[in-house]
Length: 292
Image 1 (cartoon, helix red, strand yellow):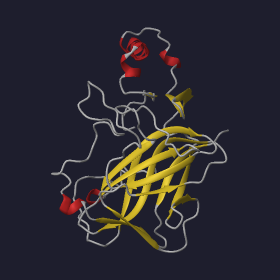
Image 2 (image 1 turned 180 degrees about the horizontal axis):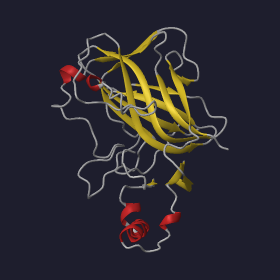
Image 3 (image 1 turned 120 degrees about the vertical axis):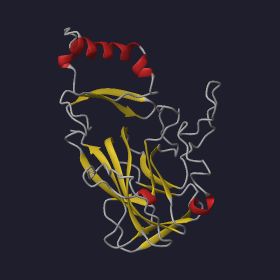
Image 4 (image 1 turned 120 degrees about the horizontal axis):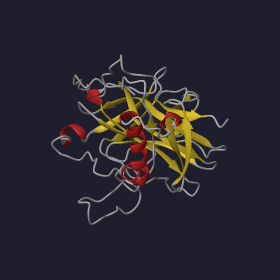
């Protein structure tokens, strides 16, 4: 997104990070690009769409679609407020103040929409705003955007590194909450990471958290949810063990956050609190793509 060239293209694919790139499809795509720009060949690259997406549907179904820009120009940036009383994701914030405590290294708390009445396409960057405090001087936040089928089972996909990857994830250490205001966008907070700002125990702070860009068409009857955890996401099933991988795959591949030197218990094993205060309501922003 910050590449200065005006001649740039985006291709988003499913499955692992290597399958689409290193197999015949990816090699043909690269040869068309390099043939056009380095050899002056007529490879048809002039007709290549600026953005080529594989729109995901449950059960690993993908539909190719071409677009002109990213994020998509017709995106409807919808805020869903976290309801502390019903643990819901709603269009209007709850009117009364509240707080939710959870153990800082636990599975945390989940907020969910009701079953959808119409299909909902979520394609693009995702962001959230929270107001939190901790019983210690820091806190790690693990956010997971999830989709559940009518039978309660979670919808996951083969990800870049893990066979049971959720719809989107985001991470933030509260002491690194400082934003780079010149680079931040409403749908993409950009953190400076040039200053450590410890928490004052019990005092709420505002956190803007980026979740990875994603894409899925959620069918009617399915539910969209946000989980705020104190540790890495784990798929609700047996971990996958493969002979060529030295660690069990539990949902985040090798990208775990369990190094004791980085997360000492005296700082990161306290109690975190989600705050719901008048005029300071936490929300999840989703990129909704209209059906027509």
